[in-house]
Image (cartoon, rainbow, N blue to C red; front, side):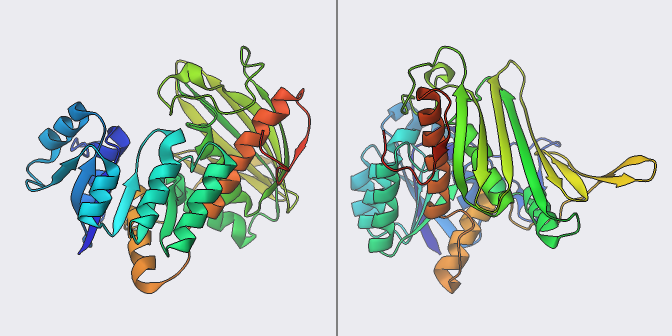
Length: 352
């Protein structure tokens, strides 16, 4: 059994799966919505310790999970946890700008695998030291861009790669929600553009929402207050020629969509639906597609991938290097806006 620890006990780190009739299920039960639930469901992992600076979150976790882990150890100091417990897997679920130091400490402390919440970091310097520390100490570093382990997005990517619709030409993504912040949730959308394009962005331009005219570097509070980060509109040009348009706005409702246009049709994609649109002699034909099931989707898939790669080798679908691409694009979008919505080439020449 592999020993796991969680540092950071907000909902994504700590909540328990909803057992309602409507809750999504996998072959292993309710699809976990938190790191704790994923470790609980995975047959090869056992949570041994958790950490948070806030005693009230430790108390809440104890109340929520006492029946599952009555002997769990609780810490308010992450380095003390790492030294005392020597976990095999460590989840970093702290505010966005605090990922770097804890990831480095986990790698240096002997963790074999680290699952870091997205975005990987909020500066390239932090991203680079996280990647370097993992490499230097032989630790796997995976970043929790959840959609990469969702059947609907895997099926869409496989459809694009099959060539059935011809070459992918352009993508659009839109995200509307009260929390449509660039780093907090925009990171998911930008990462998925990379995943679907199968390439790296080579240049971008962007415009932030009104009121953020001087916002040229990350000034967020770790993803708590939507006002601390802007929504944005932008454009990404990928090395393989694929073009992508990004749009987000802070609205009272929530909606996120992708449209993927190919030579012989398009794919319309969201978290709930996958539709292929093909031209016919009399118009457009819309065909719903049922995703190929995965035994371990979402966060459970992220944990399982780390377990499998630790034990058998292989590549991570959301490595530190791929997550760094998203961080670089987000920073380039800020730079483009600050410089008058100009084209910004990648890789960034220097971080500002």
